[in-house]
Image 1 (cartoon, chains in turn blue, cyan):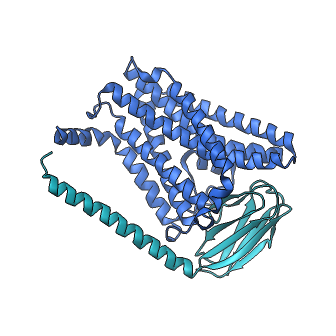
Image 2 (spheres, rainbow over the protein chains, first blue to last red):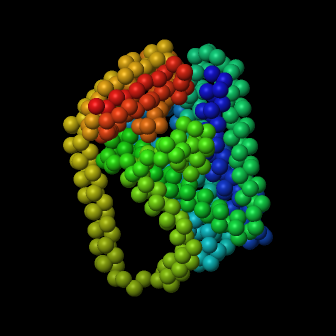
Image 3 (cartoon, chains in turn brown, blue):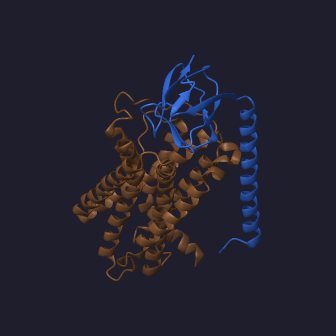
Length: 274
Length: 123
C-alpha cells in the first residue's frame, strides 16, 4: 500500500510541479527583462494553488455526480474540457511572450501572462489534486491502511516537488537565450501533450471516432518502466498513440513553436485595429 | 476597421452556423456509432476483477461497463489499451475500447495492482 501511494501521488504531483517549475523559469526570464514587474510579487503562485485545491476539493466532493453524467462518461468530458482550456491559455501565453508584440503595453502584457500562468497552474492542481483526493481520500475513509497511505503520499509528494525544483534550477542555470529556448520547447511539448490528452479522453468517452494506432514504440521504451513514466509526465509519452492523438500533439507543438512570429501577427492586427 | 459592418455580421453568422452544423453532425455520427457497440460487464470485488479475462471480437468497438462493488475507489488502467479511469467505491462507470487488432491487452487496478489484474483477449 505504501509503495502504491508513493507512485500514485508522485505521478499526479509531478505533472503539476513540472508546469509550475516551467512557469517560474519563465518568470525569472520576464523579470530579467522588466525590472519593475508585477511578477516580482509571486502572489499569483499562492493564489492559483489555493484556488486549485479548492476546485479540486469541489470536484472530488461531486465526483460520483460528475462521473455518472453524460451517460457515465462525465469524467472524460470534464477532464477534456479542463485540458482544452489549459491548452488555450498555454498557447495564449506563448503568443504573448515575445516582447515585441504590440497589442498591450508592458504592464498589461505582464498581467495577461501572469493570468495565463495562474489559470494553467490552477487547472493542473484541480486535475491532479482531485485524483489524489479521490484515490487516497476514498481509501482513507474506509479506514484501511491509513498510515502507510498517508506517509506514502507524503513521500511521493516530496519526490515530485524535488524533481520540479531540480527542473527549475536546470532551466535557470542555462544562459538566458538557451534557457528561454528550452522553456519554449518544454511549453510546446506540454501544449501538445494536453491537446493529445484531450483527444484521448474524448476517444475513451466515444465522443470522437476511432483512428488507428500511429506507431508502437513499446519495445523501445515501455510505458510501465520508470523512464517511460517520467517521459509520460514530462512530455506525454505514449507507446501506442492513435493517429488523431499524434495530429493534435503536433498541432499544439507547432502553434507554440511558431509563437515568435506573433510579433508579425500582432503588429498586423494592431495595424488593422487602429 | 475597413470592412463594412454588414460583411462582418454576415461572416460571424456564417461562422456560428457552421460550428452548429458541425456539432450536430458530429453528435449524429456519435449516436449512430453508439448503436452498434457491443457491451460487456466487468466487476470489481475484493480488489479483483470478475471476470479477469474478457474475450472480444477483433475490429469491433466495445463498451465495458464496470461495477465497483468494493467500498474503495479503483483506477482502471491499461498501457496497452491507453485507458485510465477512476471508479468510485460502490458505483459503476463506462469505458469504450477498440476497434482492436487480435492480441492480448493487459489491464490492472492502479490502487491494488497486486491483486486487481486482467486481460482483454481480442480474437
